[in-house]
Image (cartoon, rainbow, N blue to C red; front, side, top):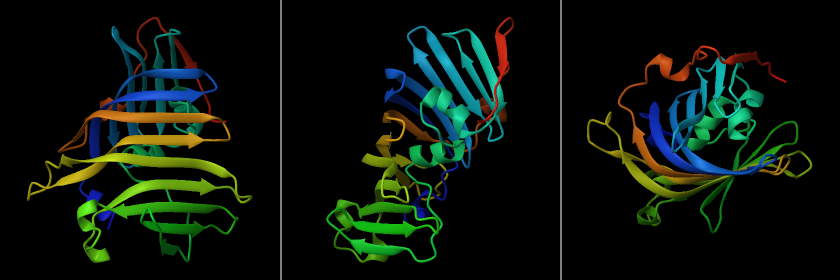
Length: 241
């Protein structure tokens, strides 16, 4: 039910305030973003004078224009390269999932579910010992409705190492309904306007507060997710570690 409510959403445009803490200290600023399912992403880190850095990925190739250090990086798309700007090592597909109110899921043959104070708690267990907990809660108006009639909100997704330590945790708050221009009945889709991602292993803690979010009626042009180096700028080829 949760995923079915997002089935019409192919691409979004958003503006957000990002507060990032990690190995590079604390970084705050405005980020403009385009996301297209399944794995196309673009992030423009803005200053009052224009973009300080632009990261693009079309799912296969990656480019990063870093005007602060006068560098242009390019190479294959992978978590290590996405981390260069976002401070979080994850694939473009997973970034799009998180920011669109979804989550990657462990493969599990027998998911377990229980009802808790927060809502439905789903537990997934992988053969390698890892475990994932996903918390979904119905909107306030649906608390007394039968399960098949509830509109669910993803509240938290946590992945645990096989030894029980937290691998990463994503939390979702402040859901707002955004009009869907592709819906013939004029309905909207509820998106979290506050998304937080924590990685205890690296100390990364990224808080994203959406200021504006728009569902696009059609996918952006392909060149939105690609860049070419400006004339005279040093180009570096980067690999995936």
